[in-house]
Image (cartoon, rainbow, N blue to C red; front, side):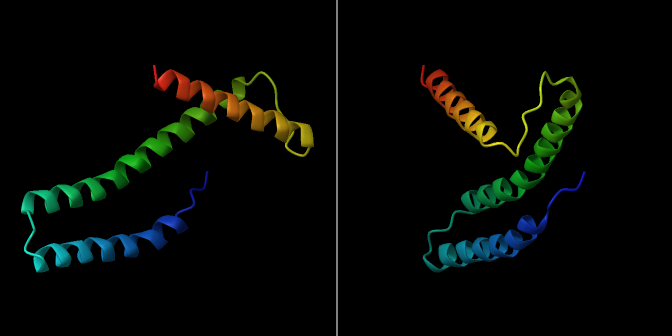
Length: 101
């Protein structure tokens, strides 16, 4: 399995620049609180490994249960795309209804 890391490699320099800009702005405006800046930086940098571990676990889980599927939907038929579209709408609506109760 190959994970595409090009998006991550393109975002990391922008993330570093934005973090540095935030530190400079907060120091320049004399509104910096070391605890707030440290917590923001730690949350940002801590999100990356947690996100990677979670995505790897989900992909691994899906590859394990894929062999037990009931049917396979062909991806080259128009009706398959319509079924998948309406299934996603149904799932999103159901999730939203369950989350608001």
